[in-house]
Amino acid sequence: NHVNNICSTWGRDHFKTFDGDMYQFPGLCEYNLVSDCHEMYQEFSVHMKRTDVDGSPTVSYVVVTINDLSFHLNKSQVTVNDVLVNLPYIKAGVQVEKNAVYIKLQSKVGLIVLWNGDDAIMVELEHEYNNRTCGLCGDFNGVAIYNEFIHKVHRPNDDCEDPYEEEDEPLGAVQASCEKFQTICNQTLHSDLWSPCTELLNPEPYIQACVQDMCGCSNNTDNNCLCSTLSEFSRQCSHAGGQPPKWRTSDLCGNCPFNMVYEESSSPCMDTCTYQDTTSLCEDHKMDGCVCPPGTVFDDISMRGCVNQSECQCQHGKVYNPGEVYRQYAVECTCNGGRWTCKSLQVPATCAVEEGSHITTFDGKTYTFHGDCFYTLVRVEAKDNNNPAFKVLAKLVPCANQEFDTCLKTLKILVNNDRNNVSIDCYYNPQ
Image (cartoon, rainbow, N blue to C red; front, side, top):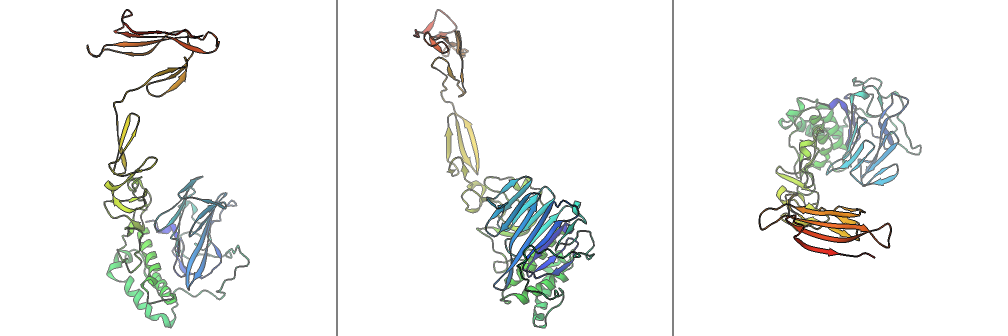
């Protein structure tokens, strides 16, 4: 249960502080969601800005500052100190990655930020920041309402005009024209389907948030108007240690790319054709998101969606299909379910002496050697009568006309170490 380490915002301007207070703040400026405000030196800050698209609020960007690094996350790209970066990004103790649902920023300072690229942001902090934070997420002191917003919320853009100047409407205030949605939301979250979650969480604030979502939705007959708050209630249930029900359908908030399926509480780490053991090594707590069906992994090579592991391809300069073979010198590798199965081949090996001093070993190592003597290039012990012992000797001497160079003068092949049994005896008189 880590629900008290999490602050979130979602839907039509709903907020839940670290300390559990829920309220609505419909501002469209850039606001400080949470910052480290206890010390003179600010270790991190998270800012966000909402915008209105066809009557539906959505988060247009998130800015996370950690020490001297500024991460600007928007729907299409990520920049670090105004420089565009590719994901995944790992540097200076910060990791930014993107999956089918979330953009995730995780830092060693004890901060995790998750954004679904639309309306929902979640910030998780370690306990070391208790009673050290400020912003729309509150002060993280364990008390739901305790001078949470004494300081005026910072507006970095003086030209920003908030369309809502009057006092915020209490979360429980429901307009008479929206009362019909009270029944819908109440019946939904009080149904037996959600009982594993309502045993852990008070559903009433989420019911009121659901009503406001439905009432403000441009098409309030659309089932997707329910998505935001139901998704948040499901996430909070998982954070509280519960097991949310499988409530999504193809017509209700259940869209996933490829042939992936939506799970309410599963590992945020995904096994892929390239990294097939990611889930077993994952230490992150469970989250909702799009995952591959059991028995399959995600094809991160050809991006074909979820495939059986046996159908995984391999990469080595190019893409190899299962069963295809890659050969290099004395090694032969076969693509087998996304992994290479390799074996050594019995192939002739070559040792060489070039220009009297440049030597290449049987294993491909090259070096330079200057000498003035007979040297053993290779010696092989006898196996049987058909494979007698032999030795190859080379005599290196200084070149006659090149003082600092070495020349190969003599080459001898001795069979069975018998100096009277020289198979080849070559002489060369370097000039």
